[in-house]
Length: 311
Image (cartoon, rainbow, N blue to C red; front, side):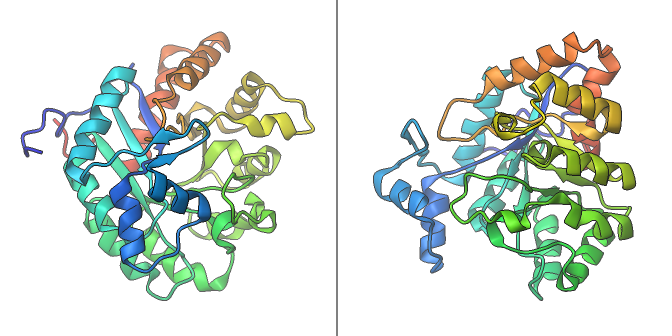
């Protein structure tokens, strides 16, 4: 891709949409894991073998990182999305580093890692220097607690770098998910001790919405994102509708602590219906243009510094 790609260095404007939580799967990304001796979960191993993934058995893009950035940008164009943040699922990935460099200015990514590892602070510093805009942590899938003292050096480095952290708590379709690590309350001492870090709890807490609200009451550096189908609501005893979830989050956190997301993936069409549904809810709740813009664009731009260096 040419360094003169048209989306480079363009700042977003009020009224545009930024998707703060999407995903990327590609054949080359999976192949990279195998070359490095990593064992893929059975679902991804089958996907690499068949070239298809997901409930609808959609084909996995077979593109180099630079071509993937162009392809992904075209999807955003079609969906009317100005910028997006990809949540990495594989750590220390050269494929993702090349993708980040190719898409910078339009497509961004949060890296992922195990914060308990001794090398985590150094890896985070390297990834931020490579262009990643944050880090995504997966305690439920990787079986760790962020309150573990072994994670403290990582958080110290994240605070030093001003690195926002997205965390997936709650239920997950991941085959290694363990709900013993799903409660966002575990983040309480960390968010308290590192007020300079912005923490974004994905999917409204994915079934732990009440716990997220309590955590956010104590720590005003805790935000949520709205990404995904939010079908955890079907299993929640409160009987919430998605509109009620938004209403409660707006009441407790305010519009400046909610980030819009769809959880779209590359093995299915962009989830425009989720974007439509959530925008309609915000309108029906009576939010003014400024508040809607905060949720749909400005909060993500601020948290992930997406417009830095843009004209």
